[in-house]
Length: 189
Image (cartoon, rainbow, N blue to C red; front, side, top):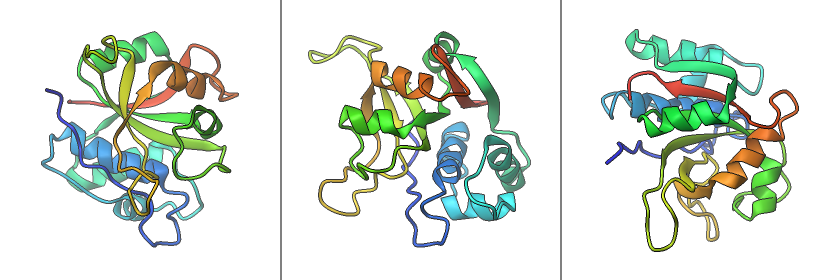
């Protein structure tokens, strides 16, 4: 079975909580890449990055994670073919993915907010196995750092996302386009 990191919420009461999806994704990537040896929080990733300007990027997350244990935990792709991303996922690597949250809202999987429609990070951990409900490889287990069960109606991450929804959420980013994803893959696991 694929190692599943602990879900990390970006909603932590700090002034950055509505901007820390990348920091939370970085915390989950660190947990996944080290198989639970190193764990951290969104605000710790934020603080270690030195970023005080708003939303973070992959470079800031990589820098912060490197400061934790001296290792590089992310392989960053500004534009990666989705087919390559899925192959890496099948090979056992998790990844931080940038999505257009409006697509997630329109799919009915945005339990947090029906009004936020901007760029957001969801950590993708694995593909599903065949079940009576779904064919193998049709859904991905995703960790949305907004899904933290803080009130009724908001589930606890992770949840299963249909791949067709993720494909649309990746493709609808104007700087990525159809068939591509912005991603930061775990290096080791």
